[in-house]
Amino acid sequence: MTELEAIRRYWNTRAEGYSLKTAYDLQHAEKVWLERLRPFVLASGKLDILDIGCGPGFFSILLARLGHSVVAFDYTEGMLERASRNAAEADVSIVVRQGDAQDLPFPDETFDLIVSRNLMWNLEHPESAYAEWLRVLRPGGRLVNFDGNHYRHLYSEPYAEELKQPDYTDGHNPDFMLGVDPAPIHAIAANLPLSRVDRPQWDVETLLKLGARNVTVDVERKHFVDGTGQPVSIIKRFMVSAQKEEQQ
Image (tube, rainbow, N blue to C red; front, side, top):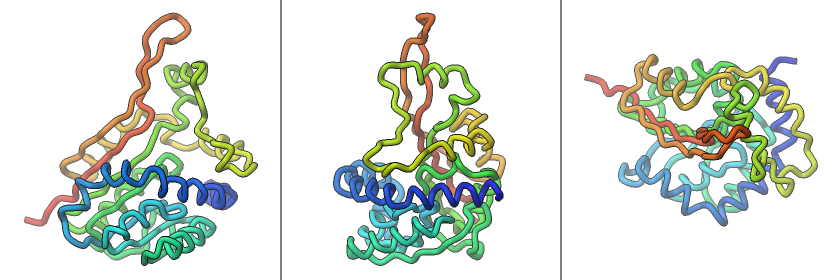
């Protein structure tokens, strides 16, 4: 079984619980996320948007509610089934497409905006993914990627120190896990390239190398004191945005 297939299989087992998390976020976190997305969507008219790694449709539903045309894209059929169901319950229209974020089935210059949340970290070929995302953007279009250093502790001592903190949680809320064992994704993450690099530095360097413009980041840090009494600061989550160069 390939790594990509193992990833797909794991996230299929998580689809039901992840959909519950999406329903919770739509009730309790919509305003927070709309504020984060506001600079990219609210002053631009109707946009053609691709939500990559859409899961059960959180971003897709938020953006469709704003009147945009949204394609919800995921490799996992279980996630897409729930995205369709959740969109219907929210009374919004989205298009669902299955495929690989590293090899998109869309023509060049199809979308005005690409959004993604909690996907890039578990890709085998993340640089190929960014190249593909830029390819399908129209000139002047933007990508906005929300992600985190979820398994950096496997290869970085400062991140490993965080696991020793009394307030540490691994992010797997049992209310949304529904008994699914996360051990498979832990094993997969150990072999994924982004577990081994510092982000979002890697993202910025990669996007610039690929020709993106106006690359910006917003980071969420955690500060604590390690076992020797030394202060530590690590980047937990972040947003990276970039623009495709406009035609001259």
